Length: 192
Image (tube, rainbow, N blue to C red):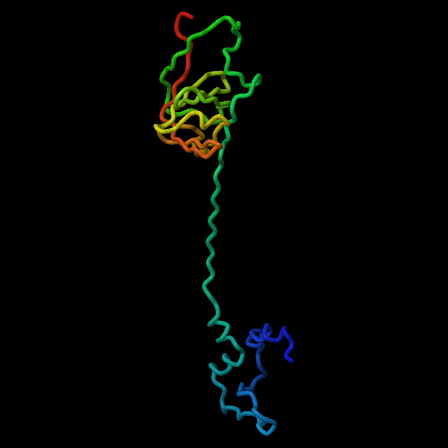
């Protein structure tokens, strides 16, 4: 019985050089055929090369690919508002005071790092609270519901670090993906 590891060593035999002047012949069929094969008079470069097994090794080589591609994505999570740390109430006002707020146009972009909390409001609008205590509404594209973003959202960080209308998409934790349609700042109505 042949040892089980012997077939694994057979390819290595191609790498072992044979002694000079030795040729490879067929395996003998009987004891009477154990006569060495005649040597060629003058070994050629090709026969020396074949004797060392390098031709077989060169045939097995494949081109080496040396390209590495590294990709990464940075997702930013904006959590929903939790009381009392991130209250959306008007700070410094008595409970009986009511302030009317209205939306005022603002730029198309907003630094993502300034958003501290989110809360869904009616229809397709999200209320964003910023670090400087400003309130901003983000209108979502048609067909999106603000209620899907009750547990916050994820946004992919761009090179400029901004959240922009008509460019960026918000991903809810429930699986909904919506594009930001517009950004507007909430301000107190004049005279109050």
